[in-house]
Image 1 (spheres, one colour):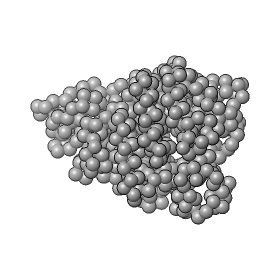
Image 2: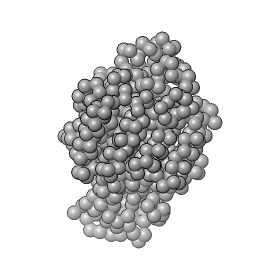
Image 3: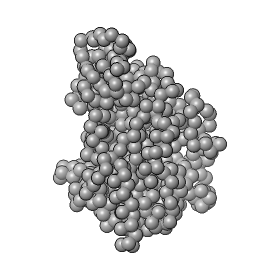
Image 4: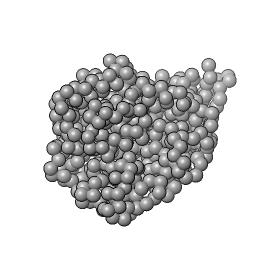
Length: 492
């Protein structure tokens, strides 16, 4: 048996809401003991963490990072479990098999992909368990339409099979097919409820942005939860609600107060990232979002789109190309306050929506570290959690450390308790918990990533353990550490 003792840190257990100075004993991938009295054990590795904050590693429910390079960036942001649940991948068995074969730095998992299932049935596009293949669908209007009864039955059957194969729920990109019949969404929620699995929705348009929408996007989540009893997770409420976030959060409040199983996530940036072919970036749709063409910057090239003519041209050339969309102006205190209110919303979960790294030579991954120059991504890939803690704990005092770990570790893990009982040992710090741990230096904790330098790792993560194995020790990455393990739903 291998034993590591993290000695004398400020130990946070968000499940109990406690903070104590104690030793944490890690043995064979689990937390074996927590003791306020310094412990001695022959052969144990003792790591002095005096003055540092020790807590359960962050559980990211919304990450499109499926690479070693990207997971290493997220490790420096405190993440120990990295899950793609908003979009998902299909076929699920292939997604898990390819991740296991390549090796993973962090724990990983996927939902069943609603978009890929619809794409296969409505557009005849065979999914490949690759995120970039899925994004190429987004500019194809055929998969976005309402299904015939036979088509609906066919793609619901695909999703049911994916759930039986271990998917962690159903990821629903409704915002990319916003004119489809709302009755289909209810059927997906009904399927999820029957399987004991959550749904993760990128909502369709809000009524404020599009009065002709078939149904208000956030209201749709609440109604489906009420009608079916499904656990419904509202993805990135900041970017889909924009300046209407207070109204949206009020809608979700009412649903939760009535007993519906609705959860919500947020990331701390006023700019999003998506494919240039997305429905809501059509030139005629920009006014509804309060955008102009120049609010959009192409990832990689850095081109800020000059006008709607150029926007239309780029959408035609490569609808799957990634862009950054500035939906709030973070130079304005009023817009920064919108982000803080979203983060402060009771029980709001921090999730990154981390994007893949894109390289000039089109490579998909690298094991080099430090990363070779030239990679582009949204800065939230590198900095979401450090930025959230910097803002909410260190600068504004709106969260205690216990509350920060509740938002970043405990609450996201609980979203998956029913579908993946193995998650019950994550997101908390108590004897028997998984030894997925992060040790933070509050004096140096900050995000460093920017639009111009998006792969600069966050600072302040002194140590990070995944399953009891150090990925980061004394601020340095272990290049040989690939301890990540699959998180799978139980066969139903």
